Length: 562
Image (cartoon, rainbow, N blue to C red; front, side, top):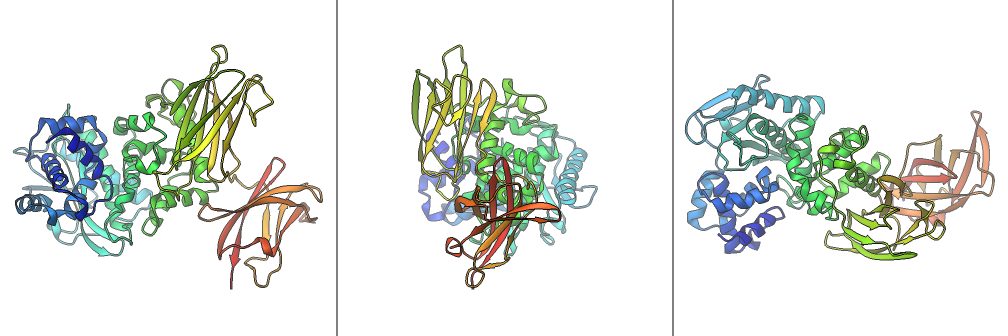
């Protein structure tokens, strides 16, 4: 098997795989890879290739599903072998975890002999269950009936030749519910795994059990399958993050981070997900665990990027604002880590690799670049030696675009404090030029100090009471829409108004004059008016954001079209 063929296929099975799309060579590659990780097709070259691509050893979810989806396309001889490997393993011994939910199938002899403490494995399973189900409130995976001997959730311990484990979907029992079981490696020896022994088993059961939750409760309705292949990155981001959430002391996720830190400009959906566990760690730090659960509750009918954007919007921010902020967090790692700020374990993370590095030529320079959607572009500008280094983080968050699209922008640096749009020091200013605004964010870091961040499209906590009326607003009969907010603005003064849909689309942006003011409960309120002709919105819930001076107000309004 040629190395190039295997590497190409490793990338292939991470994406959507439709049986008729696979060539004979691709099917052979898939067969060889699966039989290798199941221990019946030894290959030093295959092991070397997997060692060079650590993310592909992490979880066999995509691999196993690809084999099942394409089973009828293999040769008859290959089908015979694969069918047996896809059957539930048969092992002579079983043990039930203390809380009674899991049954572990194992052996103490032969190549599949368990190589770590069984009781510690049972305890790890209960820890994952207690955290993910009892503490966070995720629903349990559906029962498989008597498969595996009884209704308990089954874990099979086998030699997987370098693969940590996988969750195998089995039967669809409801529109969004599939039964499944876990297979994990039997010993996790050194030389093959970043983490060894029982610690590797601990994070593997945390990872794979969340896959069981995902397929068991949140399977996509359309297409009808246990998980959405095109969103596999999202499944792996979550499961890998749950390793850290459940077993904070193990840190196996460190092994996969370099590929993201080396290429932060890669669109989120084109990452393998193992390398972006820190995205969910970032979300949890800023919004709590509920935002991740909220995403899963919406995934059966929406794409991954859509549910990420929507869940952030429901928390009062935007995808672009948080992705740009995430860029700042990923900048302050390793030797730049700041104790008590950003990621708790940042000192152990890699340093971000700039997307482009340029040297500034006084008195001004303009750099023309392109960026893909839902990505961060790190531009490093080397200033004259006495002035240091400036980084700008450019974010495009247009999740509605395909990841192979690019968007142009230019960034200008001026050796004065008056020419550019943003002043970064007494001696420099900068300008960020692009088409449109609603999907762009920009932050600046000079000599490891954040000098500005783009908050134009953030929706911060409410600073004072605000309300819109009439609610619901009916375009056919309600006349003008009025929004009142606490404030000290004067009549005729203009404020900035933006109105967003619940899907993070900007529907209105403009200036509005204060039309009236009055006292209510001893508080002064100012009022703006939106004309009927300006509200050409569909029926739905919308968020409005008003900026008056340094104060920002937000609220909800409901549009109803007869």
